[in-house]
Each structure stands twice: as C-alpha cells, then as structure tokens.
Length: 156
Image (cartoon, rainbow, N blue to C red):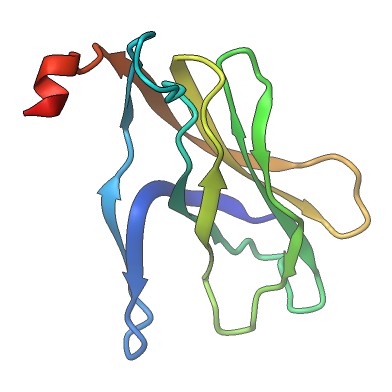
C-alpha cells in the first residue's frame, strides 16, 4: 500500500512540462473573510466562491505493481468533521519505473465556509474493490473573520 509523501493546498501552481516538477504558489494556511455590515446590501461574510489547487503525492511500496489499481478521493472537512467538499473518485496504478504518484486537482472549488475556525483538506487512498479508505493525509488551514469596512471608507 502506498505511503503518504506530501499534501499541499495552494491558490495556484504549475507543472513544468520538461522536468515534470511541480510548483505550488500561495500555500493556504489562512483564509480571511470580511464580516458584512447589516445596513449594506447583503454580502454573506463566509459565502465566498474560490478555487484552489490540491496536490497529494504517494510513495510506491514494494507490492505496488502496475496491476494493482488504487482509488483516490479528496475532501475538505470543518472542525466538526462535516464534509464541505468531496471530489469524485479517480484511479491510478504505479508504473514499473515510478517511485511517486502525484495527484493534482487544479480546480478545487469551495462555495463558502459554514463557520469560522479550523478546516482540513484530505486525500485518501484505497485499493479498487475495497470499501474502506486505507491511507489518508491531511493539511489544516484556518478561516478567520476580520471587521467590516465602514460605509465611509467604502465610499472613499
């Protein structure tokens, strides 16, 4: 069974087509949302729509031959363990000459955050045909609120 190598949660990134090296830009540790002012037109403080990039890498184990197929799924959980995002399930197997398998989801989209506090993105793995996820890796981040912009400062 593959072992977790790393997981990154970023605003964007790139993949070098010649070296196959990955870069992640603006690693997400904190997402800041602004509280709305009740008298202004509605702008729900945590109902932001943003896209992110999630990169998860796995290290091949001795028994991970090309005929062994794995499934991977991505999720994001709030501090109570509720999923606010879950991807579809993708499959892969290791080639004979590969040591790592890297999974890149370049358009992970959140339609807001139901509460403030700590969240965690997770990549999980299992063999095809199994029901339980066998290996997981996660990356925590914080959603924090800042005070609203006063009406006078908005007009300036």
